[in-house]
Image (cartoon, helix red, strand yellow):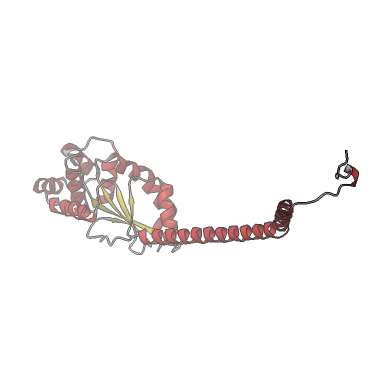
Length: 255
């Protein structure tokens, strides 16, 4: 039986149009892939690097802006209060570059701690560069003997003995009260008739109340409160805090 089929070895492979189209698609895809690795990936890396550089630059700019804003805010927060000396007792020369105005309470243990531990060190280091002004802020309702003690100190001031009397009141040797006020006056050899009359007449009651009212209007709420050349410092802070503020003020570093 005859057949028209050629032997397998003599047959030619024929490619259909669909197979040819598929082959072209594969070749085109391989070309795209090769182009991506040759051109697109390096370009993409460069773009990513450039984008990261922009991000880093923006971050640095934002950080600098934040630091500048923070510095400006800190400068704005520095406030100097115009606190008058009034006619209150002053320890130190009028020529002193640093004036520390203290609002204090003779029955306040923190005030006592500051007077006994910090105040001497300030004068030891700065001498005539500093003067201290004492203004009364007796915590009325909390310390019953604070206002009478302030009046007694002012009575001692009438006889030129304010600061020695001040130191005795803060010494803690005796419980504050009328008996103690008179005992300290005797120790300083004050004119006792004059001193007792001053206490009896409550000669300095209005002075003490005026200091208290002024401090309250200023915003003082606790003792001790200090104003170092008008810069507020609250509480019996350690010597190092006062040292830092005073040094910066003497160097002109505080706006």
